Amino acid sequence: MNTHAKILIVDDEPQIRRLLRIALESQSYRVVEAAAGQAAIEQAALESPDLVILDLGLPDIDGKTVVTRLREWSPTPVLILSVRDGEGEKVAALDAGADDYVTKPFGMPELLARVRAALRHKLQDQGEEPIVEIEGGVRIDRVRRLVSRDGEPIALTPKEYELLALLAAAAGKVLTHRQLLTQVWGPAHAEDVAYLRVFVRQLRQKMERDPAAPQGITTESGVGYRLNPAKSP
Image (cartoon, rainbow, N blue to C red; front, side):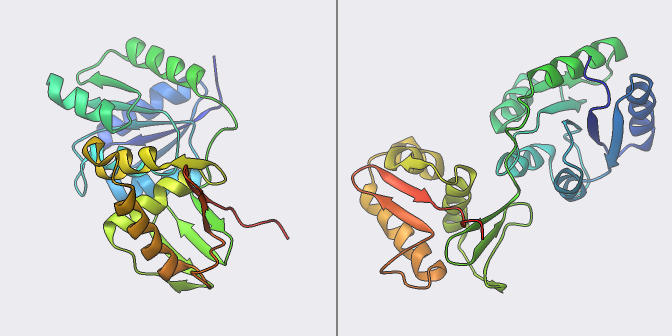
């Protein structure tokens, strides 16, 4: 059993958090807590948990939004624990990036078994850093959704940020035109390469010191684009 793993509990009900803490600590897991969605995202960045147990009904943002935000920069397994037992809710949460779904009320032996399974499946040493620095002095903070160059903020539209975040999640690797178009704009736009070029040009105008000779986002001719991590000093 993967004891000593760190688990983040996200639930706005103190009694549920206490129940889970007692059960998990009895199995030698380390526990951190959050009572709201934004706090959960921040705790995930600060604490680097091995697993997140997440309620969907949070007071600030819905749990599915938390999963989507986490998936922008973190592969940490997410186990949903919710009173919502409809098939549509389960499918939506899993499609957002959750790894498993348990409905309340729940049996503790089953929950602990799901926790063990999630931790077994976790691939060690493949986590992505929440902050990506790329060539040209640009810094992408995927937790706070902030982009800056030399400390000065860069204002991006939602689609520009979504495209940049996707490239940042695969920093150093080439993403094809089809991959980028499908994931950002949907399958109906999979062939709209000219549309993608417009958005890449806009990102370069805002981010690059010399947009005509880009360092951060480079073109793989006829294939796609690559985000280049900053070289170590």
